[in-house]
Image (cartoon, rainbow, N blue to C red; front, side):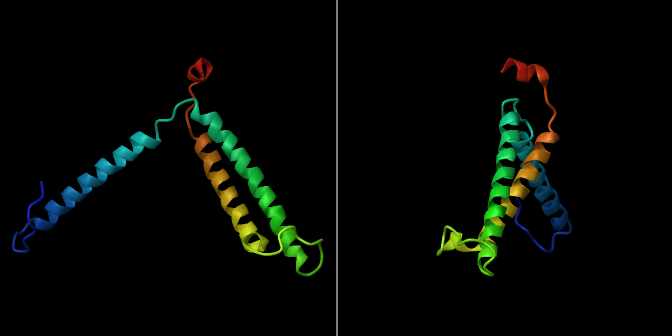
Amino acid sequence: MWRTACYSEPGYLEDATVQISQMTIRYQSAVRGIFFHTSAQILPAASMSGLVLTLIAVLAGALGAWRLGVDPGWTSPFFVSRGLFSRYQWWFAVALGAQTSAFTLNRWVANQVIDVPAIAAV
């Protein structure tokens, strides 16, 4: 229950802090309820997604290195000559983003408690 803030009231700051912290606690508990109860079916798919993201990162890094080598003449011409995909910075950014996502996803999967009977029932 919110009351109007009156600066002459001696405890107005404590009431607002308590109310804000209660809202924060409710929000955090709702997020925990959504994200921290995983089913056994999600874990293999998340693990495979981490593997695919790692492969995408390697491919994007190789394309970025190829594109970077075109300018000094060390490699053959790149297959995209103009546009966003012709820039090595974009390929390295995709590689960095994919590898960071794969690392985070694999770490999340490794920290999950696996219920073996639940996986066997699937």
